[in-house]
Image (cartoon, rainbow, N blue to C red; front, side):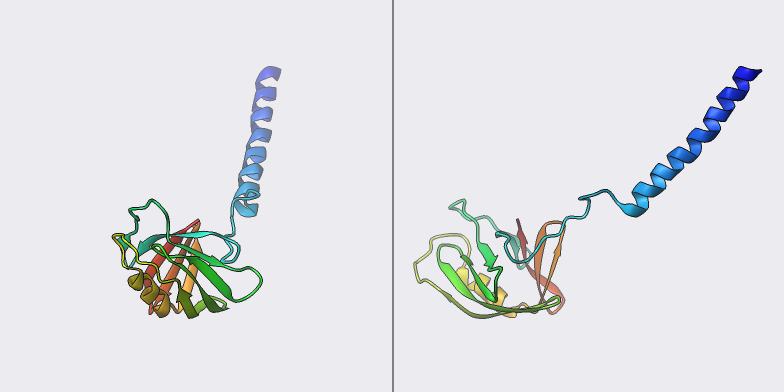
Length: 145
């Protein structure tokens, strides 16, 4: 009889311990479970443009880099380097004064389509390691890290 009581008592105490651990992990979150992806200081690579997957014949990526200390940006388009300025406030984003080198590119993507999309951007969103550039509530470009 004493063994039966001890067994039931140990089961009784183990339930609250498991409940406490479950609640603690659920409400406090695990350290590092939410990763922040800053817009600046991240080398963004173009994954989709105007709803189409982007793969260059060269195997390189179209890139976008926001300089961490200010309002400057730079990157590589299909084959040309570019730079310019941006204005960001909360989730709004505008690109300004983008200039590029003028090398002739031989690829399956037209650079002017990329630069045109950047010119239309009015907002951005970062989630799950992806940067989404938005124009009038439509995603025009998706970048990955």
